Structures are given as C-alpha cells and as structure tokens.
Length: 417
Image (cartoon, rainbow, N blue to C red; front, side, top):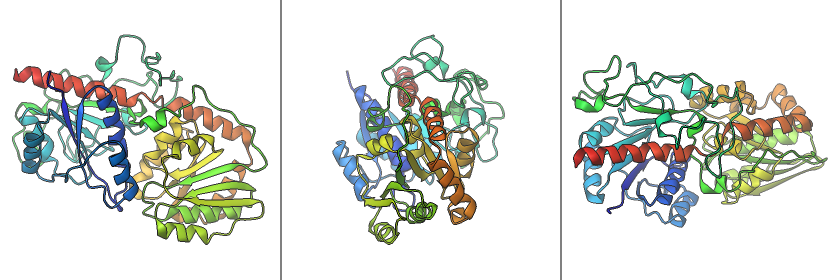
C-alpha cells in the first residue's frame, strides 16, 4: 500500500518566532507514528537551534512555496495527499486551490483564518471552542469534531497513555456547548459565492471541520514524556527555583526585563534564564541578583521540558509555549509581549490557569513587582496553579487532530477512486 504523504507549510524566523514550526513538528511526530510520510516546507535557518531540531528529527525542509502555483508544483513533485498550513503570510487562495486539486487541507489558525477555506480549521487556543472563526467579514459555520473520537465513550474518558480526565468547569471541558453541526457536503450558512481572492469556490466551500480549544493542543514527545501522571505538589523551600523562557527568539527582549524584575523583588531564589541569542545573553549577564539570589543564564536547550517540570515557577511569554507549561503541570506567570497575544493572555488569566504580570511595558511598575513577590512567597497558591494547569491540557490533542486529518485524506482518496 502506498503510504499517505503530508506536506507541512509553516512560518519560522527571528522576527516571527518558532511557535508555528514547533506545533507542526509535534503533529509530524504523531503522523509519523502512524506511518505517514511528512515533508516540511519551511526555512529555519535564522534560528540555529530550530534548524538543528529539524535535522535531529530527520526532516530535510524544502524552501517554502508562497503562491498557489508553487503549492501545486510542490504537491505534484512530492506526491502529497494533503497539507498542513500554519502561516500568517501565505496567500489564503492556496487552501482553495489545493482542495480543488483533491488534497486534504488542515489550516492551523489563531482566531483569524485570513480568508482561508480549508477542510479543517484548527484553533488550539483557550476559549476558541466558544468563538467562531473570523473570516475577515464572512460568517463561518462550524461543526463538532466528536465523530473523530476513538469511540463513543464520554469525552473525559482516558483513552491513551497521555490522557487524563478533564474536570468539569475548565475551559476545555466536554461540558461546553457544542458548536453548530454541519454535515459534510452541506453549504455553510452565509457562504461566500467566491473566495476572498475572487476564485470560484466550487464544491469545496463546505463548512470546515472546526477543531477548537485546548482539547486539540499540539505537543511534542518531549513534553508528553515529561507529563506527570498527577499534579505535583511541592513544599516550597527557602529558595524557590524559577525558570524564565520567552520563546525561541525572544524578539521583544523580555528575558532581561524579567530578570531585573525578579532581582527587584528581593526574594531569595535560584533563577534560570534562557538566552535566545548572544545579545540577550549579554543583557542578562548584566543583571545583578539580590542578596540570596542566583541567576544562571543558559542557551536554548532540548532539556527545557525537564527544567519546566522541576521549577517552582515558570515565567514565560503568553504564546504557544503556554500550553506546554500547562501540560507539564507547572505554575506559570505570563507576560504579554505582543499585541496579538492580548486575547489569549486575558483568557488564560481569567480562567485562573496562570498569574498575569501584564504587558512588557508594565513590568517596571511597583504593582507588578509586588504581585510577583506575593506569588513567590505563597506555596499554597503555587500548588493550586500547578493542579489547575495539569488538568487543563491532557496532552492528547495531536492524536485527535491526526484522526481528523487522516479521515479527511481517506475520504478524498476514496472520492478519487
């Protein structure tokens, strides 16, 4: 039997960061576990550690296509059955063109689909299950992904080694109201007569299957292998251990600002800060710890999941790494480093999954310093954060996404035969 082949087109770079590539690598691990062949189309050269991660995983990325014609050429050259698109810049017409040629298309989005009309829209952000996709003015329809679950047991049932029960009341609980169901082949309500670029949508404007919320978070083997079987409770010592990490590039320079804030709290602690590059390292090394504190500066490392799991507090940007921290059951304090993180940041803080330190420009305030000091000296609050975090992300999201994608690929193949 000819193996299924999937192409992955994702963004990566010093400015745009590594979140797109990281979640796609996690999905690729799951697909390869199912004997699917995966080809990446991405340029990771601006981030050396990311390029090394691709190489270590056995991927040899191809130059990323940027136009519909380029996408079709790559599809033919690599004999692809489907695509995963994770980009803020790719021409949205690509999804329609690929579907018209018989490819299954999964688009990973963060709220705004940018006009893409894929077979599947994945929005793994907290609260996304309660908010419809934004299509730039269109009114999209959604459908529940329940039919892709492994069986008919309640969604909270443990079905894989990584799965854990989801407590009632959490944002990703199965008790949330299911979105409008639209069966395959039905036109979506208010469906546009053309795509945003004026192309005829033909029969491929059927409502995308929408996978939304923390049930569909894509996490790597490195994270899942470190996930504890139950929340970990610690007796906070005189010197709490703190980890500061701000993405693969720390494009906004958050790490030195946070290190200085920790020093200003005056709380004795062992602090580890990840320096995304040499510039950040030099800035971090200029921060003087307070009495009773140590500050160690390290390079990006594959040991990050282990460091997260053993830390009393993890301070991070409010990006895709948030889901990794939650899955590992770590107490987290988040910093909003970019405007496009505002919605996700607010949802996480409002749900009580982490402590909010505000925007990067707010960290120098007395109120933020006092918030951090109070957290570091509150063992019970840290324990509550760990328990809530662990319950919020069960680690089985990528399996659910792979089920949906491969079912769509099989349907497309069946339609062609």
